Length: 116
Image (tube, rainbow, N blue to C red; front, side):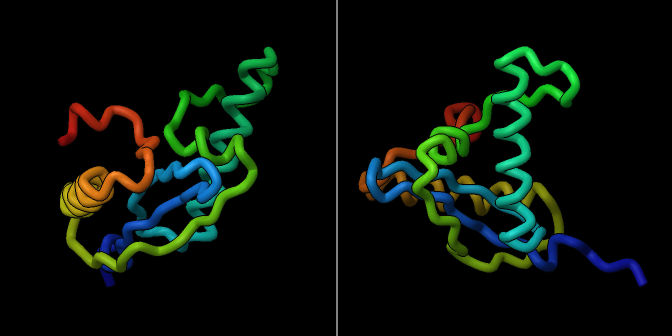
């Protein structure tokens, strides 16, 4: 049976309440798995900065602004079952725009101007 992985799509946030920072993302993975990926990417990025060439280099991601604080919470904003990455990303951008309009949190997502 060919199941669409985007049926489990969701929009999530990672926030630091102390600094009023938020990263908004989307995934079809369980949140715990997705958070582990953010942490792995962050560790890879930091190892690359200190010259550890034994690990795969990572590029900077907006979630790092929050993970570096080590005072964050990941949470589900909404379930969003859909049919494709394009649909999921479009909903993510919509939610980001809503948060930007509220002005309560500083959005840490990178490359927003190219998507909004």
